Amino acid sequence: LERQLILQNLMRERQTAMQIAWTREFLKYFGTFFGLSAVVLTAGAIKKKNPAILLPMLPLSFVFSYQYDMGYGTLLQRIKG
Image (cartoon, rainbow, N blue to C red; front, side, top):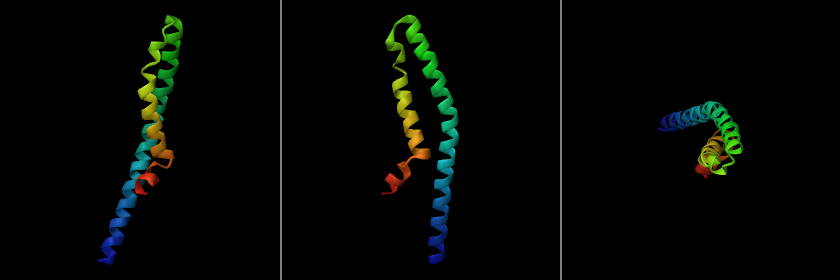
């Protein structure tokens, strides 16, 4: 029984490590998309003199912040707590 608990904990730790690694990899691509979107939308808002063009940045910034916290922050530690 003790060996089974040790193996379950090991599998849980590996699964958590895989989730963090996936999040960090996803963050690379999403960060690039987020940065390019920010530049393009800002240029469009300046060119058309319409700040409403920047509205898509709001939900994108929430997604970016969540993914960053999951990959490099303390989100998993807070969830465990």
